[in-house]
Length: 344
Image (cartoon, rainbow, N blue to C red; front, side, top):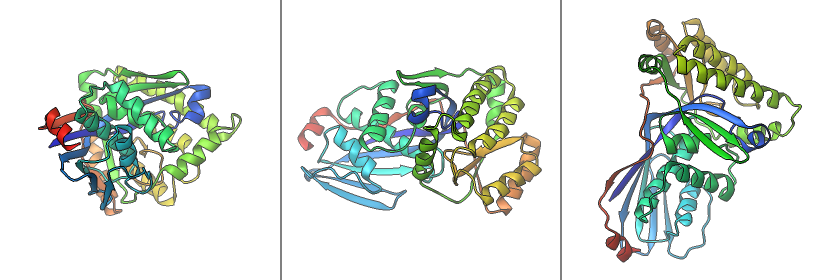
């Protein structure tokens, strides 16, 4: 058996500037951190000439016969595309599970890709570094599957930790973000995540955002310019430990984010955010592309009990978390190369 995991992420600032429609012309910049909620891949060898895939999150099962033409559709399309990339068409059984539901704005789909690449490359005897894992994940999702997404989530999951990530037409660079130790611990305490109970596919929102971003004189591009500038301010605030400054920027950029595409927010999200603000939250936003998933809020400790009570009474669920620093990891590998060759 081989077991691997990769972390999901929370994006602090710059989300949307990692879409090719924007960064290829203007350059993108995001600040994000991985957290200790993971996507897991379990691989076991089997003698039959097929691949079996089961997912607890999608409550789905798929069997791929050896030599079967690849069909990258449905909930298992991403998994099949990664298997095809590594030339695998038989002899293994995959079980996939996540600590967070899919479609909640924490970058889970790209975390799936990163966890699969980490596990299958290890199975193949390959040693890929973080940059190679992230680049391959982007190639599979953006080029192979033509998903209308950006590159932030792949790099956040592949590197782990808190990073400032720059996107240009020429490539991607990742800079670990250094914070004062006490400020980092306080930031972790002051960020709150609340699950709205609603999941969504971000593709529709991201397609519209990409389309809107193609017009350099349009409202979306001006909003992205502001969001990118704010990401640099967030980096500066975190590096010097100005946490309330960070919280204020969250509040300002959420208003900019709502200008990117229809569906980023809705009446219920606006009401929930206003409720949180009335009870002491300094700033926040919806994680990911928007439309549902998790509310990310910055709030001082003394206000958190009343904020939690108010939002839970409104039907939300608070999720405790910590910052992750490990990135994708192999937790167990009981395979030998000879055992894999006999089965494959």
